[in-house]
Amino acid sequence: MATIYDVDPSELIKKAASELKKVEQIKAPSWAMFVKTGASKERPPVELDWWYARTASLLRKIYLFGPIGVNKLRKKYGGKKNRGHKPERSYPGSGNIIRKILQQLEKAELVKYAEKKVHKGRIITPKGKKFLDKIATEMVGLKPRKEVKPKVEKKVKKTEKPTEAKNEIKVEKEEQK
Image (tube, rainbow, N blue to C red; front, side):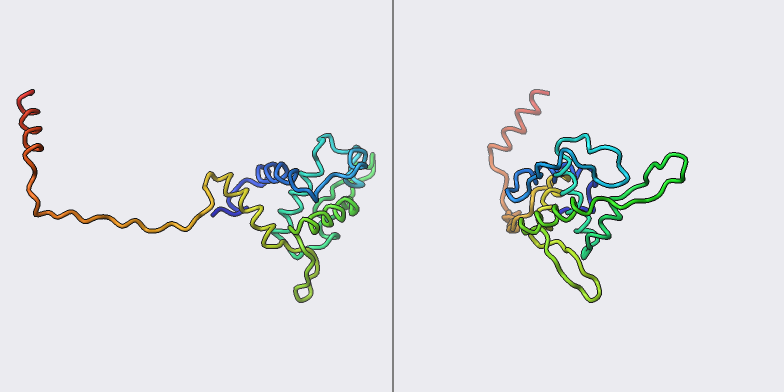
């Protein structure tokens, strides 16, 4: 079975975004088409389905780096802001968008909040891991494994003599040559 490490990340995000559209709990809010994704951006995203692509991307990041919190995710989705003559500065991505997506992923039971020693944040659930691994497996071209019973080969007795019909076929082929 393939995992997300075996496939191209951008292709995985595209496929996962199309699959996430089918999930009932994940919907883009009405304000999503007007909002920028961070202070470093000048305009809203051009893609109409950017919400699902960001959701798939967040799900992948949580799979890789979980437990991970909103603040670290804001840094990952941030960017440099063009400030004219002044030097560029790094700004974090939108925390509201990340929080809303994480809440939707929790409702869909793909992600949950956890504390591991000193690390707090979201981790991927077995359902979420299965969701991404299934998509990766389909991309690789493998079918999910099913229990396969080993084939038992029949043993042929070597003491059997060839039948007369086989001998006749050989004779006919020699005559044709």
